[in-house]
Image (cartoon, rainbow, N blue to C red; front, side):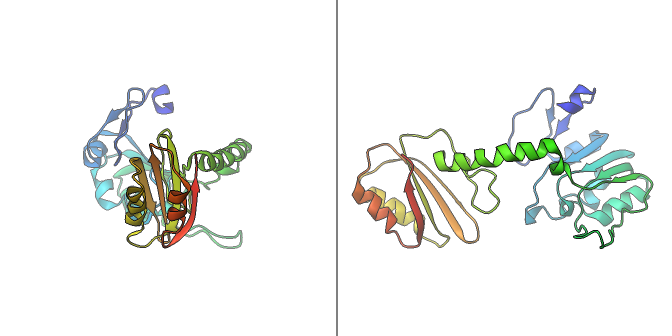
Length: 241
């Protein structure tokens, strides 16, 4: 929206299907987008699969003389490839505030291939240190906790499986368990044995934990609750409503 406000035409590519905002134009592939734009900005997360997401191939596809901005995560860009594109004139400039490795103390020197290049802006990633950002964090974190307590929603959690939930349907059962095969089947077998119909079910796991949320359409009884608590590998079970 800010880019449009200053007169830019916005094109975007996303691995997930998302509706267009404003007059932004969706491209089907990254290969379709890159040759068309004068400025490329990255907005992707730092999961391991995104290591070197943008590298020599992508820089070669960009319009000659284009600008490149990375405010996302340092390791999603292949820094040697970016430096080579800048030195060769393929790109006219870049602005970077995240790096694959950053000094941990003031006594450690900052070493990066982009240092010394006249067409690069290197800045520290300290947007979260402003007074406005700190105030927003102070509001954001309690809101996320209350969302988890009241609905089971764990969207944007950094240490727990992420589930973004729809509006609660009837009764919601929340089950946290060790991430081993077969737990979901055991949960569903308990519900089936008690003739409980499932309206919706949501499962996410990480390396250690499985998180299952089940919406059901009938009054539950204590036999069901007790049986779900006794499912093997259960860490915690609670009834939201």
